[in-house]
Image (cartoon, rainbow, N blue to C red; front, side, top):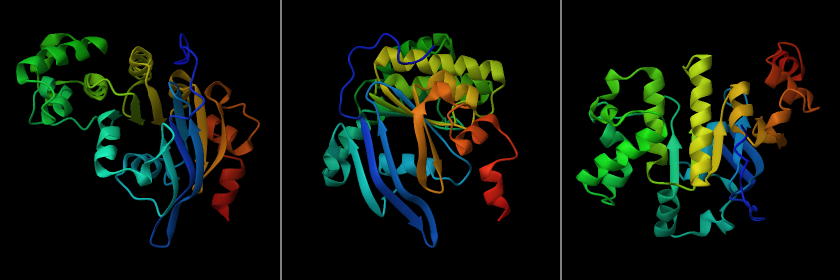
Length: 266
C-alpha cells in the first residue's frame, strides 16, 4: 500500500529542497549539483549505485557533512542561515533508521528505543519504559522485548527495534538508510509495511535510500536516481523499471547490459 493514501491536501512548499548541492573529498567529486524536492507528508526513495552520493546527500541534510556549495531548505527555510539552536530544533524533529540498526549493545531495548528522549531529559526513566512499550507495539513487538539486550534479538527484531527508536520521538522527517539490508524477502516486506504504517500514523515525510527495488515500490511515493553526483531522473516510485529512462530502467531491473555498463567499460 502506498504511503500516500488517506492524506489531506499537501503543502506546496517542499519539506526538503536541494538546489545545486555540491561536495567533493579531495579530487573526488561526490555531489555535482544535486537538485531535488521532497514533498511534505510523502515518501521519497533515492536510488543509485555504490559511491553515487546517496549517503552523502543524507549527511548533508542532517548537517553531519558541510556541502561545498548549494542550498538546503527545510520547510522553506535555508538551513545554512539557521543558528545552532534552530538547527538543533530541526534535528529534534528528525528520526533515523540506520542501515545496520546501530543499536547500543550495552543498553536494554527499552533504553535504546527512548535513547533520544532520555538524553534530552524529555521523559523520566519510568516514563521511558511505558513509551518504549508503546513504540514497540507499533512495530509488532511485545513490551517484554524491552527488557532484552540487542544481542538476544534476531536480525528482523533488531530492525524493528531500530524502527521503534526512529519513531519514538514522533518526528516529522524520518530518514531510512537501506532499511531491508540483511533481511530475507518476507521480513523485508514486513519491515516495509511497518515503515509505511509508522510514516502514515505520524503524517511524517520519509527520505529513504535503497538498492531493493521491491522495497522502493512498497515504501515510496516518489523516487529519484542519482548518478555521478547528479539527479538524472525523478518520478513515481511505481514506474521503476518502466520509466523510459534507460539508465534508471537498467538499474531497476538489475540488467548487466545498458548505458551504465558501457560507461564502466570505458
